Image (cartoon, rainbow, N blue to C red; front, side, top):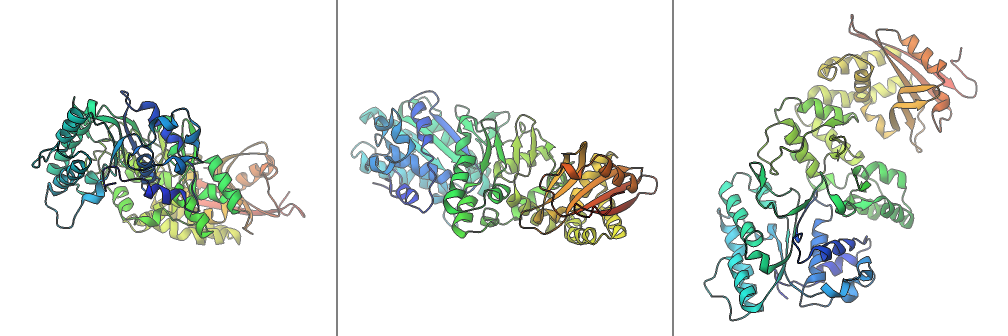
Length: 533
């Protein structure tokens, strides 16, 4: 076994013998279906810590010669498929993690020369006496081995896009790297010596102009993972099973780590965070702690028209339209706010609804990352609103109407661009930002069906919270008293499921002429019906 050529199954063996392993060997059934066909060029892009390297190790263990992986896979899904034994350990596998070829102090081109040199050196050991000693071109070496020994290869590249993310300004090396990939995967000779090519990284294949540099690849991305959507992360059934096995609260797991949704799979969870939460027996922002929020802060602070408004809207729980088509699949060629939003989809900071072409923040873990990034950026009005939201909550709980009206007004005036149009829907954005930290104690629902209509904003206490339910009705150019009357007349309280004990009715009115808010808060207790006329 070598380091790069047929490296064996030890790494995947450690994975499956970890405390928590979720069977994703169904991916092999897909690759078995395309191996040796025109669809054998596969590029899978996912965010960091979403299981990309584990999948690469799994495919290496399954296809690679020099080891026997029959027992390793025997207990898993793939073992029950028709072609399991047909392809098991039948191919020379070349497995490269591009990050392994970096060295401190490298000059431009050193990494690529190292890839060619080190892989060819191992190929000489597997196929002695065929390659010239001075051969330094990997695609040509593979073509020679195919011609002389009928050798065919399964090529697996992990972190294929590392050079575009980590050497952003070295355009020369980037182009040379793309040429290496073209030689490996797009030349006429490669059709003979490549049995399967599997690339995995964070970004899709780099575009030059309107076309991909490797347009023969079938891409499975965070924009559209197609038939491989259940391998992006953990599915709902998988997480339910883990929560039951390890006695974890499924609803909290869902709140923290769910939210990625695709046409073929509506609920996908961040796999690394789910595993960490189980191992630590505590919900926290594990994924966002693996990398500082500095990169997120840099992206959302870019000077593109509409970007800040878009970020504020997703921050308060709304969706935002985005055109993902213009993105060039790198981290430097940004031309618009849509390019920034698209890279955040690929990085996992935003989820994407392909049918609606909208982005949104998927879960509490990512919401926390955005909150940290905003508060450390130069977005002082938004950061100020987040910091003051706890005070606004406390003022609401103690029914201090003047303090609530003043606090909401401050958020509104500081973030006036959110009110590009003046209506109650826009006001609900202001309310959501003003009560940003309520998510710690509440489940917040906007336009919630309740009683004989739809309540504008409802704050439902979480199971562990002792805070009162809050029903907020918004008015524009009317009165807070009228808002309270509507809550009562339409019996919104009756429509709030699980509404127990203390309920606060909060009426808010915005007067356009004076640009002032008015607030009225009443208490409704189911037992003594305080506040009911």
